[in-house]
Length: 428
Image (cartoon, rainbow, N blue to C red; front, side):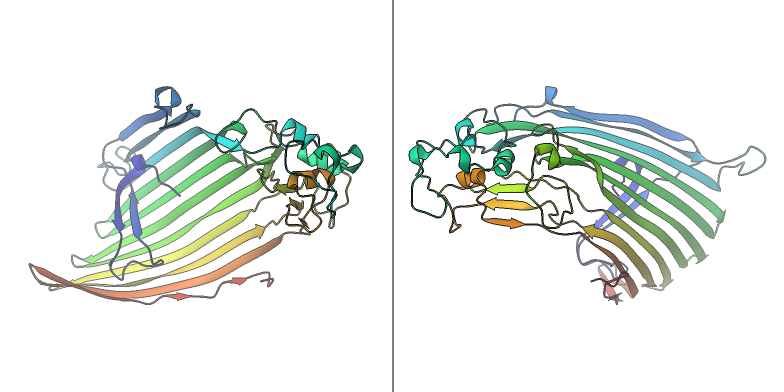
């Protein structure tokens, strides 16, 4: 969850040596506070944009990749009241709402090494000697006879794009443009029950959508909705005694098995039947094209399915503070329950590797590919899923002792218990 800056009232970054009040991780701690409404109504509209039309070309670049970035939104805050009926003096109940939207199109230049037209047809004349597989007998003219070319393997090789020139690092240059859309919705309500009791509630939800695998044969949509919500009760018992109780719920969902389509830069159909492939598979777990790796050339990767993730965190936290003379004493703790469901999808469509390290090689990895003389083939039968669970409890005590105007001693102890993670499915 990334709160947009226009919805933030303040934030604090604690890089190291922070007090025992903070925990849950060994790295830096970032505390953020969402804006609240006030007695008066305030709001704003904004838009920030970037565009390649007003952007300089990068050093040594021959062209500027496409860039379209728009970040726009609005926010409003104020009192909730009914004249002469409820909260007439606008001092008890307040609201704040904010929406933030981002639209990004980002271009990237890619350089590949692909077979030439002659090589795709089996003509390796002018190159190192190509042998009949498993022998030291040269193939006449370095041109593979038609009867040795595998219909299945050569069809996979034809998915390589045609070379469009000679460039540093390869012979095929193309641009991909990746879209990323983000929508964020934030709401907060503050209620002053009395001078000693205050309750606030916030709800934040964002949703990311993007197109992935732009340099693979199969593309997909990545949807990531996230949520963060909490209720907080602040009780001021005395001017020197304060207790803050917070309950929160947060998490996200990563959906990657949606919008699965062939990459139009390379293919029109990502299925085996659509490409005329007839070789048998081991497990028949996927109808997608296999990935191929040819030594000396860019790999053609096909990922038929990607992982999904469902993560939820429930937590409660209490902080009690008391000022006693020149001591500020804090006692509290937190308890958190994590529930995460995620699957793992291996290469169920299969992967062919062609390399000259094979004992049966022709001496040229691409020639091996055309003849179906693969070095290795791997294929998985199914994907796995884990429902991961654990509970974490962390109590603490902290004393900030102001010895004098020039010296403050911070003393604290935090104990953390993290339950060993387990799978509710009992499969890990």
